[in-house]
Length: 343
Image (cartoon, rainbow, N blue to C red):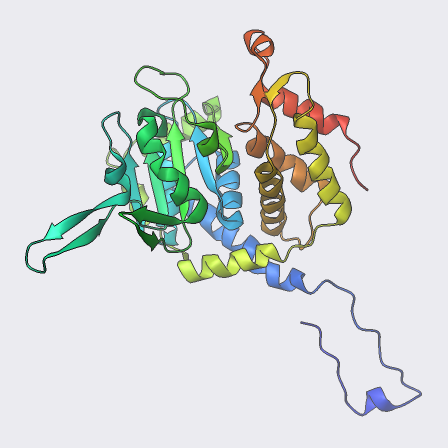
């Protein structure tokens, strides 16, 4: 923090005091955000090879306080990446495998009658934790999906008229396979809207796959995972999120975000545009993106970097465009490029 020195020299007229530095105050405070991201990335890279974009988006979502949906074909380390992120943090971690026969109480918990006390006691479900990995989220029916609505938005669970708050930080990392659709259920739009990001990942490059084989040729039991150590606590994550909130964003950039989202509601190729929750998501994610880069202010590039993952699951193509094979990412790119970038 800038300080004003009031020594004797500053009071002498022939030695006027130097002007106070105009360097932004939060820049020094934001350094821990970039440092924390670097530490977490370094630990995860002990095991992972490639997937840099996935890691970057997970860190952005973590510091922005949002939930993330990771989509990709089987075997490309979606679950492993979530496990590694949890190992890098001293947080309570739970994994829930969604299946067609999973009931809401299997997620949230249930009340059980205690014969000794003569009262019902609430047994907390696996959703009570800090980082919750929901594997194959689209395999559970709508009844179970609905159990996540209150949890993801309000971070609390209501059972039998009683409300139980969840501890902070609380992050849901969900995975789904976009290829195999047998025995799956499409996620409700209301639930999709509660995810800050939908992160789409693909196969590794040839040189990355070669490095994967080289790294694990003598490690069939994944012993490398145990070398990943926690580097941040729950309290530290909360403090870093406060720093992210302090990142400055100009009014011109707020207008830029509003124009992007508004354009999705008036695009002829889209059946469903983005909601105001999407605008807030871009705001939060762009601040986190800037903080991870070590800046205390948002740039247009921060906004453009996070717009794709924020919007790609919140907009719907018209049936005609969907049949033509048009992708939502193409529409998002066209919209962002058509708008004038603030200077």
